[in-house]
Amino acid sequence: MKELVKFTLSFRIYIFNKLLMRIPFAYIRRLYLPFFLKIGKNTNIMSNVTVLNKSTRRGQITIGDNCVINSGCLLDGRGSKIKIHNNVDIARDVYIFTIGHDPNSDFHETVSKDVIVEDYVWIASRATILPGVTLGKGCVVAACSVVTKDVPPMAVVAGNPAKVIGERKSKLKYKNKFFPYLDMV
Image 1 (cartoon, rainbow, N blue to C red):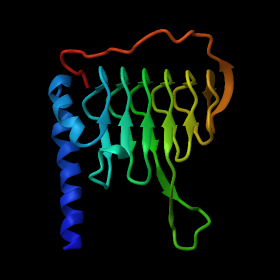
Image 2 (image 1 turned 180 degrees about the vertical axis):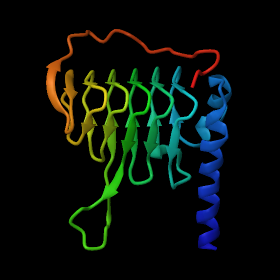
Image 3 (image 1 turned 30 degrees about the horizontal axis):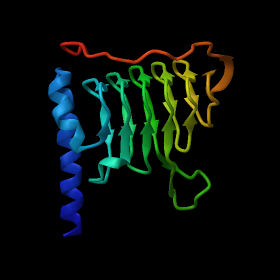
């Protein structure tokens, strides 16, 4: 019975990612998203975003209002929670992980920690956010960066591992609203 439950959950998320998340119309995808995660108003998760969640609890991944998550992103909520606040812009091919392996474990054990993305964060293309990281309000993560530690509010970070290279000067008065009629993948 336990194996049947595991299979059913796996099949459910497979169908979601391989069929429903490939629909090129944001408003149609938006109908199915609340069954798999909590999503705020005016938030667009583009096609070909992969959502991993081994639980049927929608609260494992929460996304606030006015957010954009572009194609090719991975939201890996299998281990712990991903909490994305309001007005967050996540560019293409960003990976957010909540689970990894302990390199010092004799048994290759997993370690999981929440990832928190506060308001007005901008994560540029191909960045990787590792378990346990908090991205402070208004920070910017440069393209191809690997974030291994918390990022202070309004900081600009870059590199592998990401380090502070500057400070954002914006007053953060904008609201993201990006709903193209047809996703161009």
